[in-house]
Length: 426
Image (cartoon, rainbow, N blue to C red; front, side, top):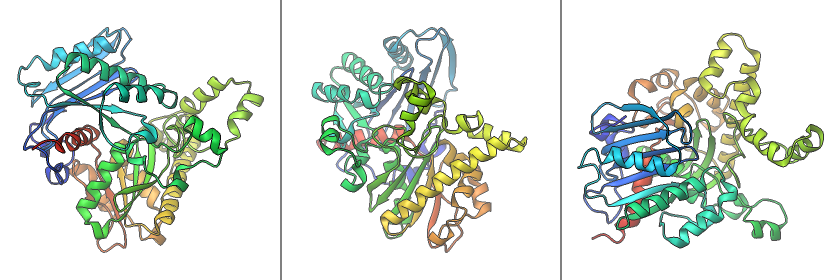
């Protein structure tokens, strides 16, 4: 879980530390907090060297059997089960673990908070002052499971560390400047403006980080048009042109776009109304249905792609169809985004499925040879042997590159914190 040196965990040192934040100091220490609806994940790291000092998580907050994990330096992960009733108790658990080693929080420069929804109001990391907290609260309807917990983490950290900079880093920031044709829904413009109904996107911290690493690896001339596929239980695609996001698959909420573990992705906009009128569902039931009972689990009963593959091997036709729908939808987005950018230089896979599933990678690329995309099956199958580095899995000399680039959202958040504070640092 923790490695003393950046080359031992996550992306390799040459890929991860490609561009230290401009104007920053030689070393920093940042506590990164990801406060979810029922979890708290954290890391203490140096964004400049990518060195991890400590990391941990508290899952199943509010349950009798909350899962607590913590590791410091090169020590093995310590695990235990206890009752953690709320986020305040989880925060106290984290502090107790971090303060178990007096050096971990020594000289703490900043705390970076993942915030899922900032909308188009926030296009970069900002100091989480009272005005920013009000803005996060206003976006709760678009991320009701995440923004309240993100806000709770900010308030707890500011209370405990009043003299340390608390910085909000938004999942949506990378997409805050999407071109108007990509961001605008074809609905009544007065209603859209009043309710802030436009394409907000999600996973932006990952898309920004991964696209930068791909461009650094290939060179700007060879990677000006990048499609990133962040494929995990939640999945999203983005089109990145000359370092700027110009399209993304998730919309005003994270429900739109690709097929996901439990989320439907794109459906006919009339479907929710039909589920209400013909299926006797309430609006709340429709929302839960599309977010929790659809996607892969709705198609074949499995939300985890590994289970889908096992079911296919056992001869389950519903699992085979689920995989084909998943690949078809993803492939369609790659083609659409190539059209948006006038071509494609690199297709990048990341996140749990994207980094670990050669069958999905090969299946997505299958049929995209007309775009210059190919997969070398030997390179594709060998990705796991050298995990942690950005790897090209297309044949040498291909017109476009296919890559696997491990994401590292905690490091990306810490680096955005460093960029913000570095502008005022000698």
